[in-house]
Image 1: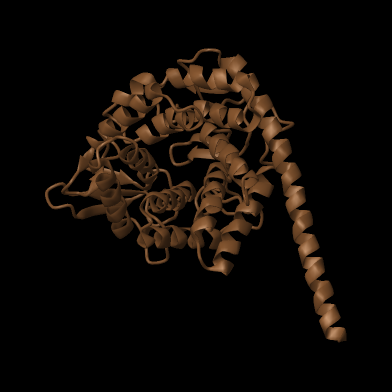
Image 2 (image 1 turned 180 degrees about the vertical axis):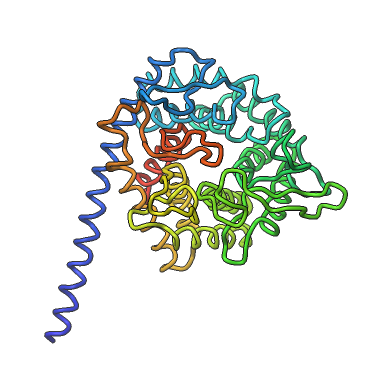
Length: 391
């Protein structure tokens, strides 16, 4: 009887402890979202030009901006849409509409694979909250434009032009499939779905090592579709694991499963997630490359952390194994807890962004240990996904 009572008391303690941890995270997330609102208001005032888009911070903490043509341009209007969704504040709605309209011409850009990032994060979020024929038309046109970069012999959408690879495909490209899948389900050609599935299948086959880690760049032969080389562009080495690339893999295959319900893609997302989780440091914010040679004296990358946390919240919903589901959910919460706290939350620093300590491209010595807009975007998305758990 004493053992039964002891087991009961231990269970109560574990449940109470889990509840306290959740409540603590609730408060951290609520505070971080309010901070994000504050920073976004300041950014709207600071830039005040809907043809310029926040990209990364300069040494004084202010934003370096880019034109709509850059692959990062859709993240700022996307942040504004998410903050409006969170607050219902008309200020964020009006600002989101302004910067989204500034993206309009990008629906016709045939020179990039990043139309998903650019159009679906801006127009896509706007349409999700306020469906309109105007926004839908832009999204469908962008998907049609993106489809022109697909090569049926390779079985992939071409990532870059005018680089050292004849036909490069990067793991990041998985993120742009959401635009194709959504469009195929909302009035676009069914071929868009077929392209998305084929790209995912080819990537699944060629981009991964046996341990679940992903290569960054593959170069294909367009005459027969064979892989010529496997390289990195932003990671430490060809055989190392660039943290943000691994995050793109987790997120990209998770969203592909959402649209296809194909268990192969779910399993690929899980393998990529298991590798990532198994190589996280104690605070759950990865180094910029999982195999960077000077760890622990290497920069962290909050963008990889935020992307993965957001992906894991979704992946946990699709995972049937209770231990694995709990593991994904628990890791997502641990990442979020770290990002909502110092030194990663930019509160109290000179940064005009929400998160500190992101890395764009360390090999190019570009945007190393700064704030970057896509880290903020996925951080805000992850926090909103956390708040919707169980609802």
